[in-house]
Amino acid sequence: MKIERGTAAYISGGGSGIGRGMALAFARRGVRVGVADIREADAAATVDIIRQNGGEAIAIGADVSDRASVEAAADAIESAFGPASIICNNAGIAMHGVPIHEISPDDWDWAIGVNIYGVIHGLQVFVPRLLDGGRPGHVVNTASIGGFQVNPNFLTAAYSMTKYAVVALSEGLRNEMEGRPIGVSVLAPAAVDTGIHLSERARPDRFGGATVRPQNHFMGDLIKDGADPATIGERVARAVEDDEFYVFTHPETRYWLERRHAEILDAFDRAARSEGIEDASQAAE
Image 1: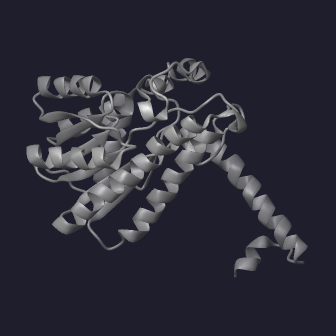
Image 2: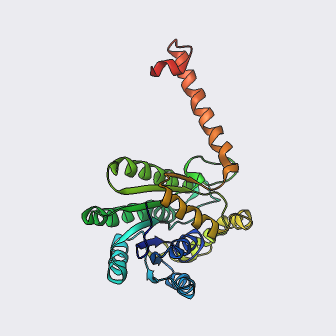
Image 3: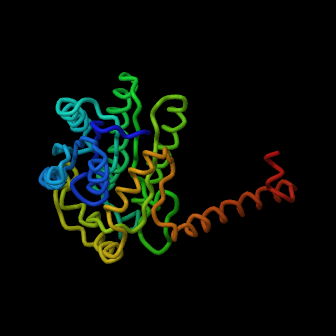
């Protein structure tokens, strides 16, 4: 997608971390940014940085787990800047450090509400508006390297489950947008110096309210020396310009996927041998 000056963007989770990095990268290209975040003060801080550098942006308090809140964000952007053409479903929360069977129902609902429904709501609110307007656009869904494999060294199965869903939603959307002027990217970073391990400070009341969840906090030590969110934001902006689909940011994690895929291919080989086929690849011919 050619990013034209004056284009409007929606970025959820834009008050900090990767969302702020995206907002700044797009603003440098003349994009007018709707910075949405459940912590509106954080969104306002991002907007202040953009404006200090000569850009245009508005802060929007939004809870992406609530569809009506995302609808209101879309309306606010249209009122200020016109319809959004760049849609970044980026808001996400951590759900680490607890075995699957010990995660509370409220925390399951919260993780699914933000990490999965937050993307679904963004797609269902903004994609019809893009299609109705008939204009070029691009959707960026933030998954994680955890959306392609479950790391055996960390208790992150619940988080990865939600990010696998984001990858599937993105792959499905790409198929559905074939032949239309709407690009799709799925972002899959690894360690980035964000505050995602502090997500629980903004947990909505209907999911149990703000709390301290120390099980997440080991991630703070793991990511403090991670990639700069500004670097990730610039990587995303270039991916939109180049119409990349899979957007990886940490090439050193490639072997994690190779390890998983090797196990899957070995399983196909065993299935083939059980059917008397020596080479599994022949079964597909």
